[in-house]
Length: 306
Image 1 (cartoon, rainbow, N blue to C red):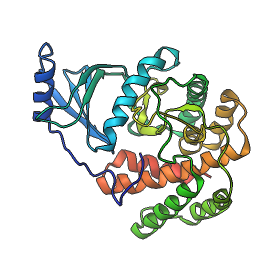
Image 2 (cartoon, helix red, strand yellow; image 1 turned 120 degrees about the vertical axis):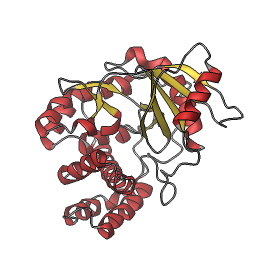
Image 3 (cartoon, helix red, strand yellow; image 1 turned 135 degrees about the horizontal axis):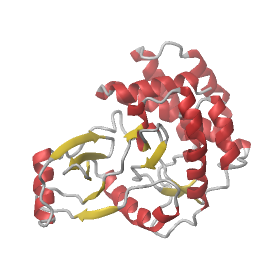
Image 4 (tube, rainbow, N blue to C red; image 1 turned 90 degrees about the horizontal axis):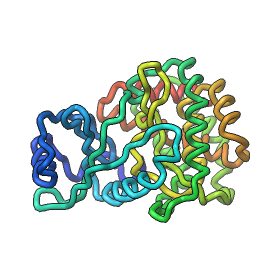
């Protein structure tokens, strides 16, 4: 979820259900497409549910092509070492005359996204422990050679501070969040990060885009999977630790770091900045595409981020 233009979520290529069926049928003739239903579209991919048990994802932007390739290669190396299920691609489609980019398919993981589940504050507190244990396990893995470096400045404080300010100004102009003063105040309190050197911990395997839309929730209202690994990279753990501030209420953060372990103050402040950037961007994005569940999630989380 990286902002590169005014509306980076706008697709360069849109795959319809008809085109998706054609591509799957041509490249995987043993797989009969009996049913195909849209699952939604993010910044990078359009997803379809095929035969009620397979998810096929098709890139929407050129930047997503390499992301999908990295995702497939890394997940096959690390899935068995993680305490929550993650997607494992079993169908790898290639570029063709009908679609210029590769695509992938995997077995559907059960659960609904956390933004669709609309967890209560208490349910989020209960989710703190499994999410912390998941990230502790992920960050403890020696990064496989297939994992790329962070070339997008995901934890770059100067870049993130400026983009966060731009997003907060957009929110203010759109008048889609009532009490902006605490958000601007928190950003101002993090302004000095722009003058600091990055944390030396730049060698951790990160999910890279971990927020409510990429957390699956089971019927018992607990985390049951982590999806959408296109932003997987070797970088600063603050990118992933932003989840503690962007998804959990204060009581949940205490539990999260109890199970994750000790984190230095600079990394925590970078995580706070990243959380503020991510939520502000999500609020603008979800308002633009009129996705109510994601908008409500971003709105609720911005209200308790401090």
